[in-house]
Length: 420
Ligand SMILES: CC(C)(COP(=O)(O)OP(=O)(O)OC[C@H]1O[C@@H](n2cnc3c(N)ncnc32)[C@H](O)[C@@H]1OP(=O)(O)O)[C@@H](O)C(=O)NCCC(=O)NCCS
Picture 1 (tube, rainbow, N blue to C red):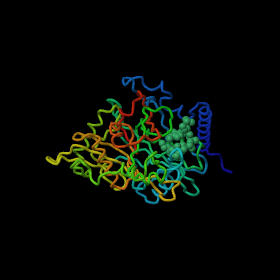
Picture 2 (picture 1 turned 90 degrees about the vertical axis):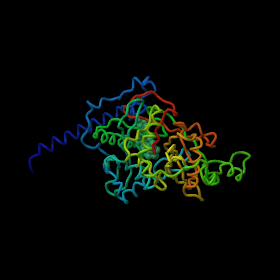
Picture 3 (picture 1 turned 90 degrees about the horizontal axis):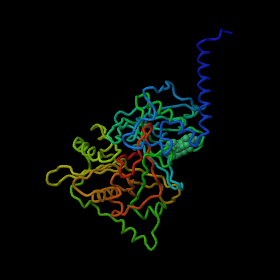
Picture 4 (picture 1 turned 180 degrees about the vertical axis):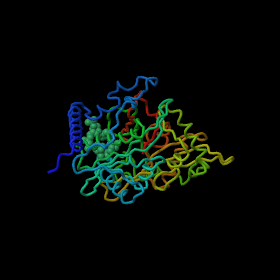
């Protein structure tokens, strides 16, 4: 037998100490109503939101925070990995995980089906980091069982701009639910974000956790009512026939306003500042900091994102802009239709036409683009057009959160942030 290696013993003692600390923390955490979120730098209850704009502040001091150098430990048999968004087979495995295990509606009728081109768009903006496309897999089989992503973005709260991580696609395989894997994914991505010198994040969730800065509601506008009724997305209204319903939602083949055309690369330099200026009226809003970033998020990509400008027919100046992203859901109980395709209202500005007329044009384009329904949140000025354009209120809320930033709660019309 060889003499014990002091280096190794030290390492084992350190590992045991870390394990003990994690166990103690976990035990302490179990006592709170939010065993995980109660330990995080977020407002833990309404009363901890900042009382006014003047009191906005980070909830932990990034200067004194110690950031672990090594990834958090995972249960035996699992390992961390990062997805290479340019690798087709890795993206296929991510698609498989999300299309089977990601968000469903409350009744279990529909499940988001983010396509590979959509995921690539969402995960690969300028300045993206592969380390923030974080997954957990089974070591022996390579099967993906958990995922969370972050991408860099800039969010303004009142007069302050923050470089943030935009968090999305948190997902745990159904067989591993309620085993506290989600807090490990969230903590590990937080660590990786902190390592880049970023200490704030923005994220949304249908569930309410501590503590939303804003609650928005989805509104839906039927484009293909017959299909929507068939898959039980909506129902035939009392005293309405199918043909009257179809007539009610029928749209013209072309927009009523002249000069609507797709956004082109040559428009980017002019349109980006116009959108940023428009977004300044909202208390909290996204900021598009470079032409490259704007081009990424808005230049049209088939079945992913569509953006249009309105060009003045006389002087060819751009007066208005609208965009929507396209996302399908699996219909889990329909024999006739495997999927449902929705357009989601994204960013816009209007200097030439009313918002209602602009969004009527968006409905026409989405309808021609084979979308079945147009969804929009009641943020920005969206409530202005819902009634006239025949949007109906949905039953789900979308809560908005900021990590490590206390600010007052705001109403949806004061918000200019749309996440994917
Ligand atoms: C969301 C999901 C990853 C949570 O995993 P889980 O196995 O159900 O829960 P875990 O036992 O791992 O963790 C529970 C903790 O995660 C928190 N949590 C649950 N959903 C969350 C969410 N969407 N965002 C942030 N935290 C969340 C819980 O509040 C709880 O923390 P708490 O005790 O402090 O309240 C999982 O349910 C899932 O994949 N659902 C389908 C996809 C989905 O809804 N993703 C979120 C989109 S916003």
